[in-house]
Image (cartoon, rainbow, N blue to C red; front, side, top):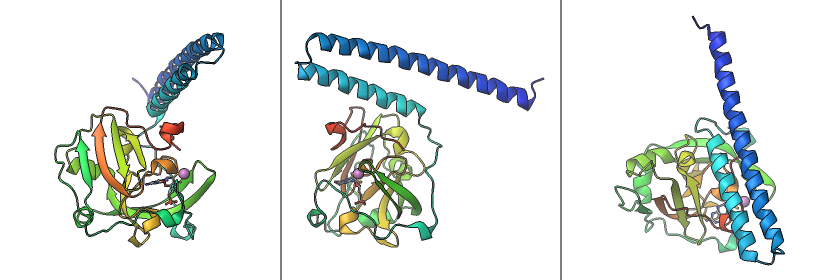
Amino acid sequence: MTTPRRRSQQDLSVHKRQVENLQRRLLLKEMLSLGALGMLAGCDLQDGDAVDKVLWTMSRWNDRVQAKLFSRTRLAPTYEASRITRPFPFNAFYPEYDAPDIDGAAFRLQLSGKIDDKRAWTLADLRALPQSGQITRHICIEGWSAIGEWRGVAFRTFLERIGADMTARYVGFKCADKYYSSLDMETAMHPQTLLALDFGADPLPAEYGFPLKLRVPTKLGFKNPKHIAEIFVTNDYPGGYWEDQGYNWFSGV
Ligand SMILES: Nc1nc2c(c(=O)[nH]1)N[C@H]1C(S)=C(S)[C@@H](COP(=O)(O)O)O[C@H]1N2
Ligand SMILES: [Mo]
């Protein structure tokens, strides 16, 4: 008979083996990468394209390992309302006064890719779905963080509602300000990933993502697209505005 204690020891040893396997694979891959860098050194690092290719390959691989370690059930911390940062900091690739001016009444959220029902959504349609909220910390790669409150539709609920292909690898976002980003399907379905309509008690202000932003507390700030115009589901790596300039695609916190 296996006592609970014994069972947990067995679980631990299985876990330990998995970690060891992972470490072995990491080491092997690192040696392969070093080998590739050595080859590049041989060509004087003159060939920028080849160097780029190796670095991008390493980064993509790093994303895959991080995705394996990420757990759908790991939750980001939540906070009391008294901890909310006021005023909440603004950030974008342009100054605040250039934030897109969007007409909420005319707004239609576009859907494309591996989705059964690609009908466009009005804001009223989205508000008719069950709403929930969160008080979580937004962490920007530039070295600041702030606690905010967002409300909206659990993104998983929305994906189910539109008949998104949940076996696809990525969900991509195109924004009204030409920003774009993407998530792995696991993160898209995470219980805290929220299609946010409200910031605190009010609709998202223009600068903070009106009319829609994706709030992903398990990711760095740049993977929280504001002013979402289109959502698509795909198996082709969509990249992102900062991701394509070298920021790590996975960027989990
Ligand atoms: N559409 C859009 N979304 C965006 C950005 C942007 O420039 N455009 N910047 C990202 C970055 S780097 C950060 S830190 C957060 C800032 O969100 P906030 O203005 O609500 O603080 O938005 C993210 N989402
Ligand atoms: Mo950011």
